[in-house]
Length: 236
Image (cartoon, rainbow, N blue to C red; front, side, top):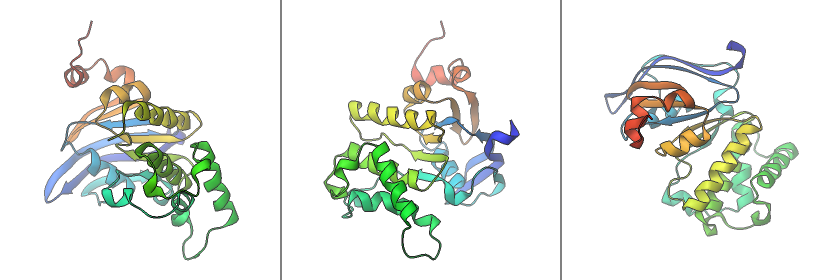
């Protein structure tokens, strides 16, 4: 329903390095969705995500923010080696998620500090608040960055390959945490190569191939030829 729509994309086309990376894509993101954007390498997943975040301009079409402002979206990017070696404390990294809300104000409010502590507790990292971020395990670092992303938003997270490089146990933990957040009112958009994980935890699938290959409920996606081909499954 219209009143539940957070973001509406209509006929979005985007170029990357002078080539069309996303072509004529339309879909809506509604409150409570757990949307997984999947597809092969070069299919336009990351370009579309950057368009939603305002990190790249769209060539044509429109992206309308109906229930949220662009700077109120929590974003968990893929980590780089430099980011993994960040020398700040866990608490400082999490609190930095509030920066977009500060405008010209050079300090954090008591309310923002409380929000950071609450999100650290939610992610189970309160006990490592004073530890240096670069000394943490990969799974701990992802929890810290997820808590940071939560500080930037009240209702929408965009996650870029959040389980890449994590071992199977930590991967399962991350998926469980993300699903828990979704079940408590946080809308999730996740870019992923992990189609089995996407259909297990997501509510909706957007399958990219430069153009839109599929958009809809997970249950419908699992009946499609494109899903069967990508997973090697058979439709019994």
